[in-house]
Image (cartoon, rainbow, N blue to C red):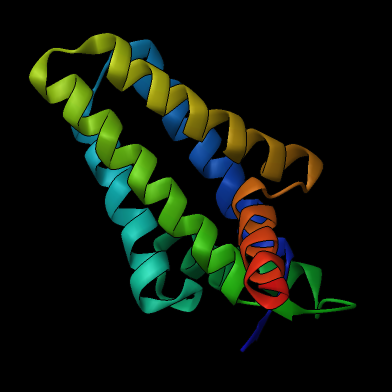
Length: 137
């Protein structure tokens, strides 16, 4: 399935704000909510992810059709990576191991910031690297 590449960037910007608030406040429940957002995108597809729905309903109609599309698999994999980092962050915050929670939240924040601001998706690049590695073996 092909997607509008502007959608994941929009979602990454929202994610950046959410994760920054988590780091500032230490809110484990906000991080749980973000983990759920990641899980929906990873497990059911980006078209069902809450930020993807916001993009499709509120932003895309104002921008028009994209000039090009991209495969959904790499950003969907990236959502899975974000989910994993968020879950580890939740475990850290919930068990009182704040350095663990803060580190994994910060790593997810850096990845979201790179995607949202610069269009560089670390999870997508990981996906492509894994695919290339599997093809050469």
